[in-house]
Length: 182
Image (tube, rainbow, N blue to C red; front, side):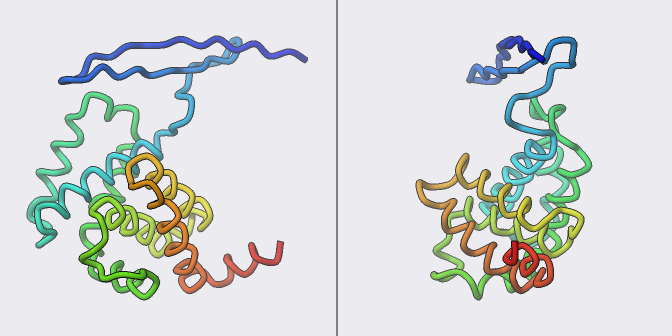
């Protein structure tokens, strides 16, 4: 059986940049984004929101609505899972102190020395591991690693992977042990 694919490229003008979105369409099937699902886009937007919140001093939830509204105004926000974005952004902001307590034992430097990107990614990954057991732990870690590869420093993804992997062994011991036996 032979499957043909057709690739189309769409140019979208944003504020100061031109964004190219490539889509692949299987013969007879609907077009879908190549590498980024709606949930991945939601995680990317949530990271932008957490990053903004961290830069504002992460003092409380008073900025959450403004950050949320600003990000939802982004031209390509419609490609994201809006409900998952809201869950992640507001959940992380609300639970940040408890999440930091969860991952701090596994970091090799003081919390203040983390870049805001790594800090935000660890908060999002920790939130998924602790509060969303319907997301397999390997998926939560992989998604955090992908965020770090896209937005973090050169080897930040290795750091994020190591921290969340150690945390998963404590937060989801049965799932982690079952995966280790395979």
